[in-house]
Image 1 (cartoon, rainbow, N blue to C red):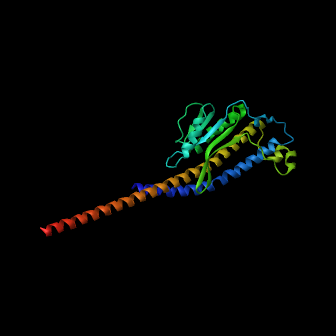
Image 2: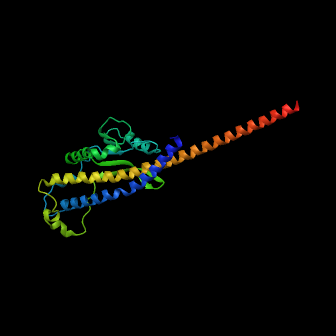
Image 3: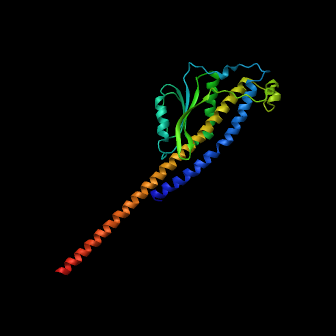
Length: 264
């Protein structure tokens, strides 16, 4: 397969992936909403005596920053924008997701490829739980390239922890016993359950952000491949014009040569 056909295939697949990425967040948003409802009914339940310091990270600790890059190139400045932010962070803890991110070694808690995230999400979740329980970080944020529309994207830094827990519209929910409010929950340490729910909520946040980044990656790849196709076609046209000039020059030389032969 020639270079032009390879670029055409990349361009086509990029368009398909953008469309798929725009649909995918819906599933995570529904689950995120359910977890937020559970957090609300635990944190604001009047029948529970609960240590709410779990929602107050230590402001004297460094940030934990999650960087979302890509596994593949040919997507414009997607990875260079994320890497620029990564270069600024020398002291904070980091989780790096994406093969194309720079291979920093300082304070990297985990480094995985994008295509490994689904299988290794529990490793990310474990880091988040430990961070929350031990108050190891002042905040947790995600650096990524946000999808804006079919032709635009931008670098963004989004804080996912700490966050405000949305309150239910019905105040009576807070007067129910925990088992009446959340009958699906089993008995156990409520603070451990709360930590699990917080980490789960953050994972859904990361997945939602990741789909926006994936859409941006493929928007940039589609733009890059479209520009490459345009340059390839321009070069092909220049080559065709050069070939036509050479043929005309050759034909004219033959005419001159024949004329000179006849003149002798």
